[in-house]
Length: 354
Image 1: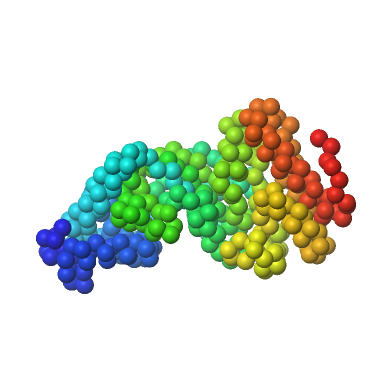
Image 2: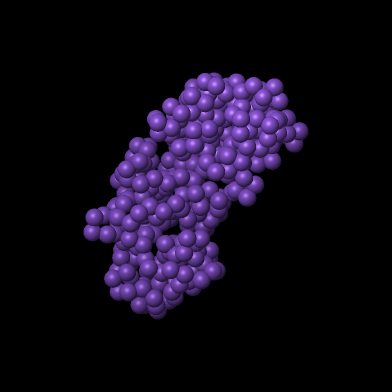
């Protein structure tokens, strides 16, 4: 690597191989591409070095042109660097007996740039209620693609702001990545430890994607994942519905003005939606929505709950097709929604007949 560093690397990182490696790894923490020509050049180098047939570059053409110029001058060094990182990672994974890594990737798009497979997945959903459903799909990747092993962190990447008035789309891609397709982990090369990140070589492959529009689906890890996956495999309706606040006149999502009103239970970006709370928090949410929302907001939320309950009822009525534990989870969710709907209508809490 030292010889390549001296001969091929730009003067600003030519000091030695270690300096070059640190430069590339730090650059990855800023961006995996975007308009950064050097990082796009690394993507191009991965495409060639690992002979990736299904991966593709997502960056603008003008940025790709600059990256190709860097590749023409420094391509051998970039490819050698990536190969070294890959071999080091493979050795570490073998040493610990790791044959695959579970990965989750969060993404979001506006109406203007949403991929067709995402749009198609929720095309039949009502415009004024946020929905999410699992779809089995072929996952498209860049030559170097980031994943996290944390549900919470992956979900945060789907929280990026979409301007009011635009229909926004979100996806959580869930893949099991074979060890031989892992370029690096946050301890062997590219990746941020705080994001529990690893980087996959873009072979793509089959995977699950939780696709939504409206507001970001809030997932509590295995709890919601088990329910939705079991229903999907049993051929039942999707049962997870994110709840936005309503729609603007031009059809976009208008969030509820709840900023910080529910304190420690709020999402990181203040309160942009009413989350599905854990069961011991349900009473707080019911009381809050009953006492705080305006009549118009309560009417909108009640309509969304009606749609959600209708979807959930279909799965609940067919729960014998599901594992016992999943059926019990559905019953808890169903009872909570009934209580929430009654609270919005001003009725006293009472036991729901099953």
